[in-house]
Image 1 (tube, rainbow, N blue to C red):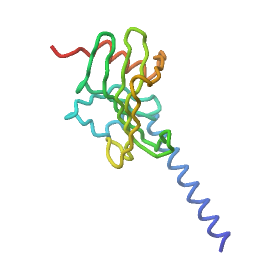
Image 2: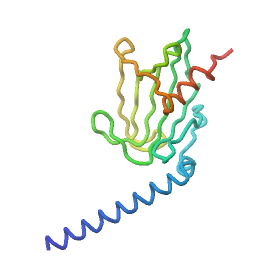
Image 3: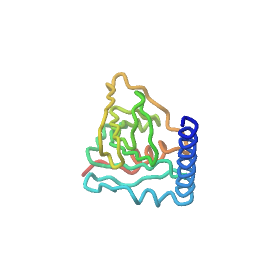
Length: 162
C-alpha cells in the first residue's frame, strides 16, 4: 500500500510540474495575456507600468497620494505575481503594495511600507512590514530593471498637481 501511495504522489507531482512548466511557457510566449487577467483597479488610479519578459511579475503605479518634496518623491507601487512568492517571514503572497520613496537627485529608492496579500489584485489575507524613514536603507536604481522603470516614472513623469 505504501508503494502505491508513493507512486500516486510521484505521478501527481510530475503532473503538477508539467502543468507549471506549460503555464510558464505560455506566460513567456505572451506575458500580457496573464496581465490582462488582473484587475486594473482604475478606481485607485492604478496604471500598468511593466511586465517581465517571462511573465513572472507585473508592476503598477498610482499617482493617488503622490507626495513630492524637493528631489524626494513618495508613491504607491503595486506588484502582481502569477506564482506564489515568500516575504521575509516566509509567508506566501501573490501581490503587494509598497509605499516607496525615491531620491531623484541620487537615483535611489527605499520602501517605507510593504503590504503583502495572499491573492492577486491586493486581495485576501494581508501582512505588512513598515520601516521608519529614519532607519530605512536606500537601494540604488539599477539600469535596465523594474526599479529603473518605476524610478523614471516617479521622478520624470509624475508631476505634482497644479
